[in-house]
Length: 339
Image (cartoon, rainbow, N blue to C red; front, side, top):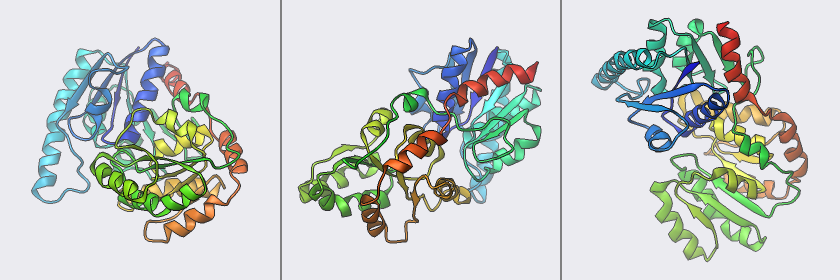
């Protein structure tokens, strides 16, 4: 079986791609990746990856573009579509799995044009425009938020389950702003740093590379000790050490935190497409698994209230709610569908 995985742009999509690639290899598949020169695709998969071949094409998002920029973006996708057709034919691909994001458009449409079966994973609570467009033509449409999804749960790497533990007390907090960082979360962390030091709560903080130096100087001026990162590929190890997280509401990070049993206060990115981060986090809150508050509200007071809450009940419930082996099920499902 020869599989193409396509999609990306942001870390959330790419984490799913990697989780599927790992299980594809374990099941004896040959797997290639088609992504974009833009976004974070190269950072994740160029050089060392689980793919036999990786391709990065000149594509960008279309939805937020206007005028000539939108025309240029569509033209680049068309050119990437033609290139994707040649790549798919060269590798004699049997099926394509789209994990969403603007990187997925070219290879997904190329697969349909070649009558290669298309499988889709929707990572967010609100369907992306590309996925909504392609959904009627897909052999499978998988979503952790859809009760009618033929496969339940979210594809998370096994390591997050292997490192899961019940949080009984708050000794360490981790601040996560997503792959680009989040100034609102960085400022929130700085605003409570003195109080956390007073309570003897250790701080782990991923700032995003662009805000790293500013945040570093602020911690130094506050005389607060912190483990500070601009970007890290060892998120699983950091999450395992923490007892509480403050995070954006990107789907992959949300489900990794859930799998690990780490209670989380979500601060969604307010400009995410269709406000999907808010709806992702709302799904968690509705199931009494965590907390969520928008950026404009008083984040500091909310977080200080959470510091006094009991974490054990939510931590246990998170571990019960998450499902291991979803990526493996998705990969094995391909053969079942094609038969």
